[in-house]
Length: 221
Image (cartoon, rainbow, N blue to C red; front, side, top):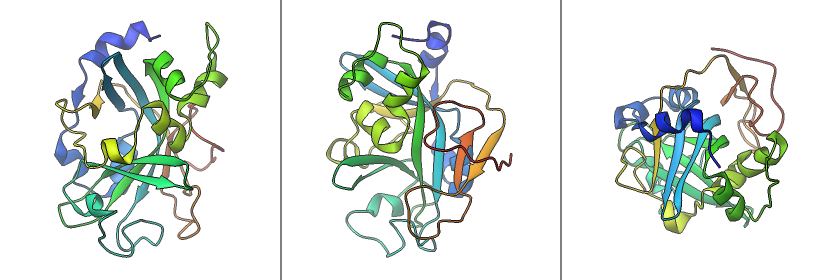
């Protein structure tokens, strides 16, 4: 199941260069909106548009995994920009992040929600969800609206994906730019944390029906 009017453009999508990620996570989180997460499987391609992100600012951010310093678990966040950091939460869900800032400086962006584009049937199988023949938005939202859901839909796990380079098509998980133009961006506080909760570091495409949870009214372009 695909969106045929955009399929060819996504096939021509180019990986985002490493320098894109070598910046403040707040900038990267905002500018990742509209980009496409792609997983290459033997059975075909999974593709979905990034519609919601959260920025984590490193050792000075009490909510970031890097706040306590470098460990074996969070080492990717302290490494070069543009690499996958996956963590396991609540003993149930994996979460997908991308490292930011220069090698040696911690920072990252959590991918919180996606809009499914290609490989929707495979996403549903991965999530063990049965879709109707012509699924509507509520069904499709159940696939990738939320960090745990999208990781499951894309088969993302720490053993499989932690440390992968999202700037290269040589791997099976990467992020590309297909020329999609994002309009207004909405900002709000991050979700599911107990520290540094009030910082407006959650970014969403305004009006997009695939973002997770509540959509804050505050915005800033």
